[in-house]
Amino acid sequence: MDLIFERPAMYLGHASVIKMEAFINGFGFALFEEKEKLGDPIYDGFAQWVIDRRVTRGQYPWSSVATMIGGSEAQAFGVARSFWNEYKKSLNSN
Image (tube, rainbow, N blue to C red; front, side, top):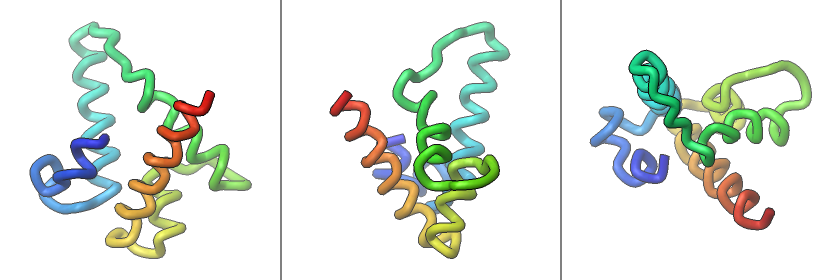
């Protein structure tokens, strides 16, 4: 995710949390289809971390939570980057 946040146009076309989530999920699905169990221990807990800390009711994808908080797709990318950095810090402190 760090690479995508650094150069979103290279991976996504433009900064978009919806495209970013689709890209990451598609990559994971491709690995699953190839019978590779190469989960990313850092990313695997990210979505649940966002849900646990940012939403009081219901289950939403992390991209939707970022969009709700940001108020627009354009602002959501920055919100998601903040989530990601906060999440990584929480992992390092444990």
